[in-house]
Length: 196
Length: 196
DNA sequence: TCTATAGTGGTACTCAGTTCCAGATGGAAC
DNA sequence: GTTCCATCTGGAACTGAGTACCACTATAGA
Image (cartoon, rainbow over all chains, first blue to last red; front, side, top):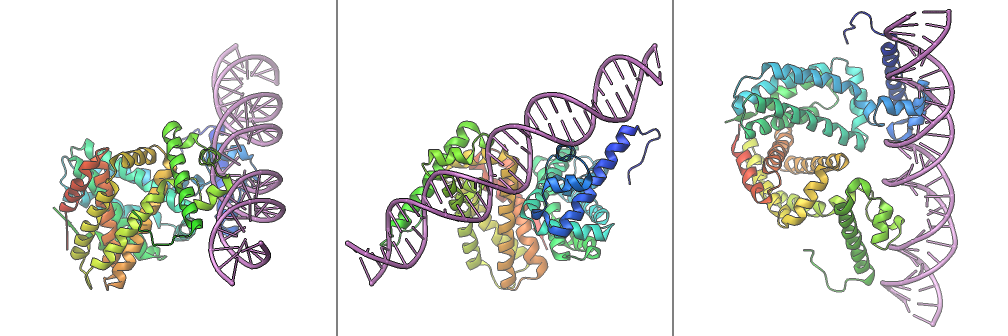
């Protein structure tokens, strides 16, 4: 998934390994006992690192769940930045976000097993649901900045990502636990939307 | 604000007083030092109750911030339930939600001082932002149920509240710290939205 | 006035998250 | 290989949120 430049220092490879160990240990334990019944100490122990190290790699217990998603969505934002036209109307902005949103869905459901595990975990844990929406707010915020830089009006720049998010959330709900259905559901939601 | 039935038992009146004391103490302290630098023990002490009692009244430290909002928005949902037509199209559903959303804004900004204090508090505290969005998700969920009961399709029932929320969020961002501007901003956002 | 019941607050606990520090380790220079 | 520096590690000790338990008190109702 990540492209390795030649001559990766030993130190960085080691850190990468530790990060993966922690994520692996965490997801195993969450699957076994559920998020609430796993302590950070448990994760650290199974990953064979100190508790302190866990917090150095992931700011808090929740973050370990979202580490992957971060990378995927960063990529989407990058792609979106390149594609958005100058001074877009709301309709144009929404149309470009539709493409980006469908792309997100395809990335996210590329590994259906993992996606479902993630979905189950987040759905059954209120804290994680909260955090998940924080992530999304962060992305809409970044997309809004992109649109402003491209000369969109304040209203367009703010509203377009919010509408896209609304369609995405709707699609996630409607698709339920069928990853295959997600991209089509996104399209269906966007189809209902005709903006000025 | 709340209608008192005659013959309110002493016990209940006392509990009401305690609840108000806690809320008052909490908002005072948050204003003085910021959310993060106030402990639950501090709040309990100023409200002259035990720490245990705080947690009995409000499940956690965050909840005390949102106690009022809960009541206001419950009212809106009640109102919405009464007004929604049978088998609404997406356009109809959105139009009714526009009215409900404007009403929310008017209620919320009825006391501008309080609204601004609340806004500042939530904006500067990530945890509270998270929790706030959870509340909203709860409302969209309830509105979706209402719409389903009224015979709306799954897509309409799910999408309409999400779109309304998108407009609301957009309006809050655009209005910034000017409570007066909020209802107009909501209308402006909805005006951009033409649905099938 | 008496009694069942519900609310109160204190104590002690678990766990998340932070701070500090001493020791280990990789990288670079010689 | 040796030395030195910067960085990473994990342990210890701490704060604060949230929970469980329990003895005490005050209210409602007879």
